[in-house]
Length: 278
Image (cartoon, rainbow, N blue to C red):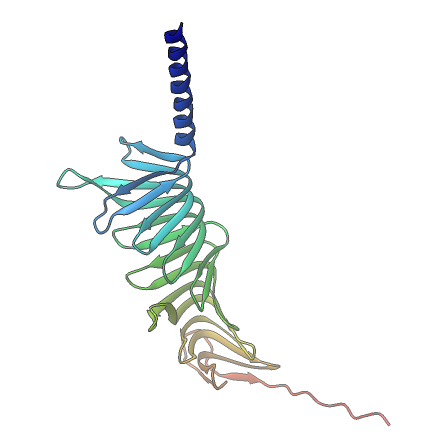
């Protein structure tokens, strides 16, 4: 009789232990370390990590993260694509992120709905709605596609793209933003190349053209093609313009054959005070 009671207690204890193990397995993080050509990548997920050997991909689901040094990728789902090496090992070469994508590093953060990160070239490509890349000083937005080339320190924004720093904004169909590192290792934009429906806005003036190069630290802009500079009620039209945003000086030139404008034109208006009525 005593042995039977002891046996029942042992069975009950084992069943309870099994239930605890199952519950903990369902709620715990799944995490793994994977090899790359450079440094290992660490992947975590709430719901688990699935291995599809026939497609050579690992799939992490549920608040998934992938970390490598100071790079971090967050998303609802992360697919880690791998390849076989000459030593018959496997290494991750591309990360694919689906929904609520956030890419972080020590000096920038980017957002999108879908993203791909190429580990070989250190290139991140984001698509979807509300695409944006933020550094300490700039915010870059795009409607169609946003790229960041880490080795080149270059961001490419396509589709109604904007780059904003303080009260100055550059808008165009396509923007190429080149960055440099400051003394504290943060990123700051030093040159913007704009193509297509260019518009540069400051609190004092608006300049438009077909193409532009903006040297940010010097606050110098070169505009090409169908140039218009508006300041207050005055407007200058030409083919080429050099604009100093710091001093407010603008220089317009004419170049035959560039856009058909062979003359530089100016329209100047002034406010005329009405005489006071007696």
